Length: 209
Image (cartoon, rainbow, N blue to C red; front, side, top):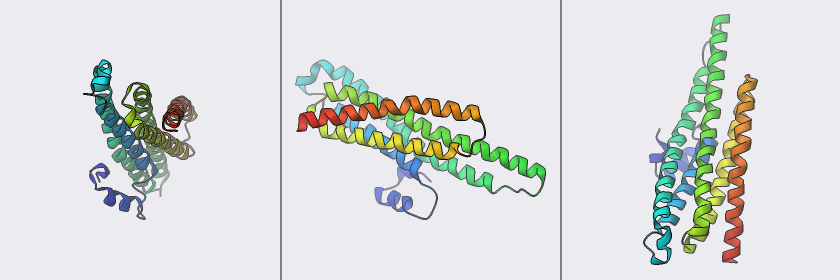
């Protein structure tokens, strides 16, 4: 199922259905993708304006980079659902014999780790968009200030939601080193996103009153 290719109404219908997918991880990636598109727009409305001629080259680069991260997040929408489906398949494996139980357990652990990696990649992509957003706040067209403030909120929501998914899956992971590595990176990446979102909120309120 290509969620990123659905109409908005069809996606929301799927999100609200009794099916386990799409879920929070897919929604988190979509929030990040929307923020990326808002940053692309903010860069685009700066390009071509004589007032901002000195930053045209930088804005072009930001727009291109934001599009790249947005495309990654659209892919992660699908991958999050696929990761959960893999977990369900693993949980349904036979467990009559000891060998079957061991094979099932190994597959479940593998699926849980994959389900952690996807939202972590969402957090990484969101962090990169947050970095671009900060530059746009201070160098871009101020007419896009409300859009960037919205992007900041979406980025914060994406990072928070991704963290929920990572922690939910980590509860069942038995590898302590994997858990430690995941939580360490999450503890580094997420605060950077939150800090950028706070900057966007403060700057927007200062300029918009």
